[in-house]
Length: 267
Image 1 (cartoon, rainbow, N blue to C red):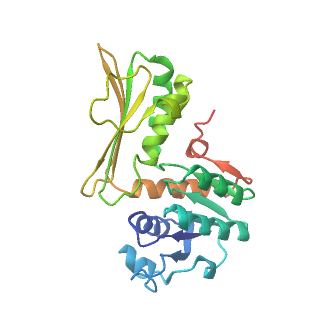
Image 2 (cartoon, one colour; image 1 turned 120 degrees about the vertical axis):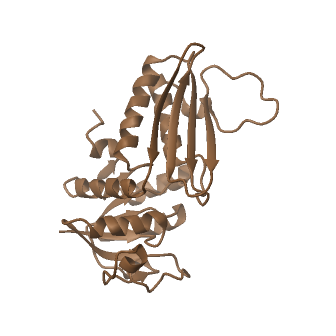
Image 3 (cartoon, helix red, strand yellow; image 1 turned 90 degrees about the horizontal axis):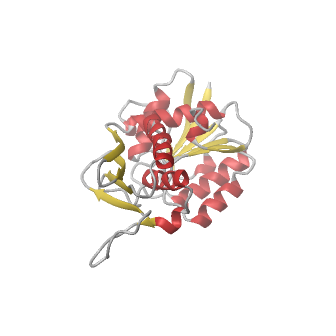
């Protein structure tokens, strides 16, 4: 039985993860956390997730939790670092869905988890990861005469923009074209911007209501438009993907992996 800790267990994704663990025949929830000061601290993780009592109390300090096989984190960059240190000290495994990290934070994270089997992905949907593969192939075939645009839409409470998935799409597109993403990405347009620069990758962002997640890459020429997109209808798709990654990690050595490795798409 795979023993799982879920951090940020009262959040949108945290509740889905608690449900996903509880619904799994091969996994059990042994610990859950929420940020200090949250009104959910001290509550039952199952009740908070809307599935009934599980006997797991939401803690505000990850250091008080028991040993587990894997910790799943969809929180915030600052909290993530604390959780990674806990994982490293316990020689556990970690599945990371937190986005919005700076370059330094990402490097510090990788250094901290150097001896731990870790999966980090911008999106744990199987469909999104297949879409990334298609975007790379399209970018290899369609030259810079096809204008490239990335569109994404999320709920109004999401704090980082563009989303990690949108950035992953842009980086995958740039990789397929063999160009430096940081040199061709255009994140904002306002006022007299002049004509579009050939080979650039544009981004547009929507934050509204309770949108779960919508992403689309567009390749546009004067004669045609190719769109590769994904719409998430339920956050459970991400939770199930994270659980798939956790199971996969049980048989892996220490290392840094992505969902392409979990799904066998890295070849």
